Amino acid sequence: MIQDSRPKHSSKEDCLRTTLKRLFIREKELVLESRVPSSGELSTEFEDIKEFGLYLHIPFCEQICSYCPYNKEIYNPGSAKAYTSAVKKEIDFYSSLTGNKPVTSFYIGGGTPTTMLYSGIEEILEHMFVKFNMQCKTHMESHPNHLTSKNLNAIVNMGIKYLSMGVEAVQDKHLKMLGRPYTAESAKSAIRRAVDMGFECVNADIMFALPNQTYKEIEQAGHELVDTGVGQVAAYPIFRFPYTKMGAASEEVNYNLSTVIKRRKMLGILENIFYSGGFERTSVWAFTKKEVPRYCSVTVPLYIGLGASGGTYLKNIFYLNTFNVSEYIKAVNNKTLPIALSLNLSEKMQMAWWFYWRIYETRFKKSDFMERFGKEFNEVYGKYIKIFSFFRFLNDGKDQIVLTDRGSYWLHAIEDLFSINYISKLWGTSKQEPWPGRVEL
Ligand SMILES: C[S@@+](CC[C@H](N)C(=O)[O-])C[C@H]1O[C@@H](n2cnc3c(N)ncnc32)[C@H](O)[C@@H]1O
Ligand code: SF4
Image 1: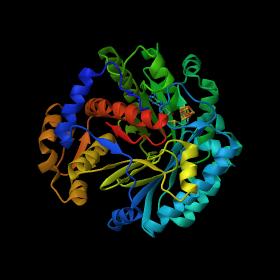
Image 2: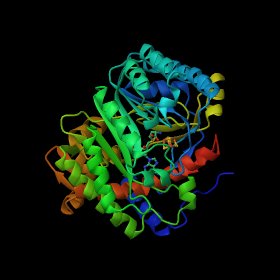
Image 3: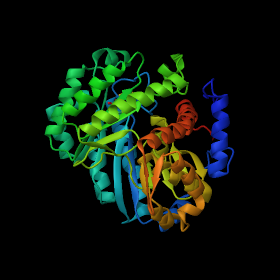
Image 4: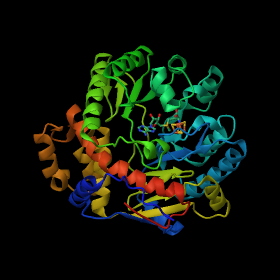
C-alpha cells in the first residue's frame, strides 16, 4: 500500500505550493506513472541532444543515518558484486543509444560511493570510459572515515578530480547527536589529507540549524573549516524528511517562523566567514574559494541516471529507476529497463524545470533559455523577474541574471517548499514500493 507521506502540518504550505505550481507550470497536479518508455522513444529523445550528463548512484552505506533522505542500504560484498554487473549492463544499453555524443558532466553520488572501493566501483568506471565519450572530469562523494591515505590514492588512481565528503559538524556533541561515527578532529584530518592529494576541488558538506546548535558554534565551524584549507563548503540547514527516522520522531517542522529565522541567521554568519576567507557563493548553499573550480552535481540540463533510484531527464520526459537494489538488479538481468516511474513534460513544465535549476545555481543567462527553447526568456518569465528584482532578490542584467544573497536564501526557501514535499512523496513512496504504480506530487 502506498502511504501518504505528506507532513501533517502542511495545509497552508500545500495551498502556497499549488498556487506556485499553477503560476509557473499551469498544472495543478504532477503525476508520475509506471509507464516505461520504449527503446524507440528513447532513441528519438537522444536524436537531437548534443551533449548530456551522467549520474551514477551507489546505494550502499556502512550505517543508516537517522536524518538521511537518500536511497541506500547497508553495504555487503555480494550485493556490490551483483550491482556492479547490473550497472555495466545498464551502461551498455544507454551507450548503444547515445553513440559518440559527448558526456560533459559526470557525478557519482549515494549513499556512499567509497563503500564500493576495491569492490566494483573501479570496474564500473573503467567500463563507462570505454562505452561513453567522456569529455569531463569526475566528481564523487565520500565519507570521512574512508579517506585513509591508501583509499585516497585509490580514488586518485580511479581518475576522480573532485571529491566531496559529509563532515556534517565540527563539534563532537553534534556529531554524536547525528550518530556520525567519527570525531571532529578526525573529520578535519580527513579534509586536510584530501586537500594534500591535489584534487581540483575538495568539498566538505556540513549541516546547520541542528537541534540546540548555537550561533557561536556555527561561527566556530565556519572558521575551523576555512582553516583546513578546504576548497569548498556546502552548508545545508538540516531538513526533516517525514519518511526518515529523525523526521518521523521530530516535533520541529521545516517551515515554522523561528526555524526559518534561525536558518537565515546561521547562513548569514557562514556567508561572512567564507567571504572574508576568500570564498564566493557558487550555489545557494555552496561557497568556493575564488581560485578553485566548483565541486558540483550534474551541471548540464539533460542527463541519464544510472543505478537504483537514478533519475533521467531528457527534454520531454523525466523518469526514475526503481529504488530497490535487488529489484533493480533483477530487472536489468532480465533485460528490462529498471524504470519505475515516468513523467511526460509539457513545454511549460520543461521551462519551469530549467528555471528552477538555474535559480539554484544563482546565476544564469537569458540567451541559454533562448538556445534551449527558442523563446525570449523575458517573454516567459519577465514579469516574475521584475517582481524578484523589486525585492532585491536578483540583479537583472541585459543577458545575465545573478541572485543576491538575500534572493539566494528566500528563493531557495520557496524552492524548498516544492523540493521537500516532492522528495518526501516521491522518494518516500519509492522507498516503500519498488514499483509504485503512480505518485501524485
Ligand atoms: C550522500 S550524503 C554524503 C556522503 C556520505 N554518504 C556521508 O554521509 O559522508 C550527502 C549530504 O547530504 C546532506 N544531507 C543529508 N541529509 C540531510 C538532511 N536531512 N538535511 C540537510 N542535508 C542533508 C549531508 O550534508 C550529506 O553530507
Ligand atoms: S548521510 Fe551518508 S552515510 Fe549516512 S545514510 Fe546518508 S548517505 Fe549514508
